[in-house]
Image (cartoon, rainbow, N blue to C red; front, side):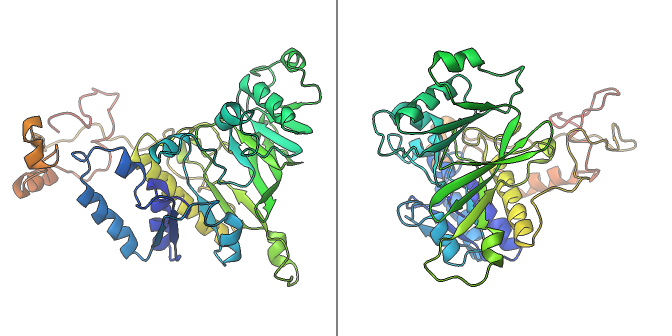
Length: 393
């Protein structure tokens, strides 16, 4: 797992539970990511965070800190070192700012750059954004044209712009392309990047899917520009052709491919990277990142067993029809136990804002649970008197 933030750690933890030996590589001296740098100590004390991290390591997860992708190792070098799969969860612009590296151009995924970096630094620092002859730009609206112009100035010969939007809802028109002097630039609509292919530390091809027909197309690409605030989470493995060919000399190129994990249940029918429901900037909540890490671990497990990453067809989504429990009978109502809070003036003594339940309060609150699995989480359309935040049952 490349990235010792919440998602990378969660992926390592759940991979260990599935029986895999997991190693986390983190660029900074400490694990934890935004949990360590962006959450106030009174909300998450450092000793609690360290206790949680120790629990992950105790599962058998190896942690190597101070190891940066691109500086100390590459994806290809990890695959050559007999790692069966490499999961990249390095975040993006927000994580870079948290590390004090906002002015740096980073490309943790071979040949891949953030559109933000290209627009900000491309013309001024061309050596840091190696724009090769064949370039693919994914998304970006009108800014995709600005990016295409910079790429041309940096030496790109063939440029393809991919939009998930249909032609009718396209953010640009043919006249816009002509106005920018970008004749020869190919614009494809209803297109979602689904797979990356490369050799050693180079990107060589991208596969995109036409979202309306499902047809797959492979295009040559050495540079990939993505219009998002973060790099996509991807699972890298040796390509199947490399595994099935006869034994090659040690000097032979290592061929790899990368695919995203399966989607969260609510968006399981979406296709490709940056689909609806996916995070385009750093995760807004640790629980979402933990969920993404768990999906990644399951996807890695599936790939290692020869299965394409996918969810079961019967997984519960927000649109699933479930039995509705809207009321209970012959159950005495009891009030919730409200967790006591520390006053601001006593924070230096308390340490945390939430003091936690006493043993008696915890037992009383637990005794309120009817173990129905539904009534605390659903507001019934009949009466609408019971929901999670009510003070009584």
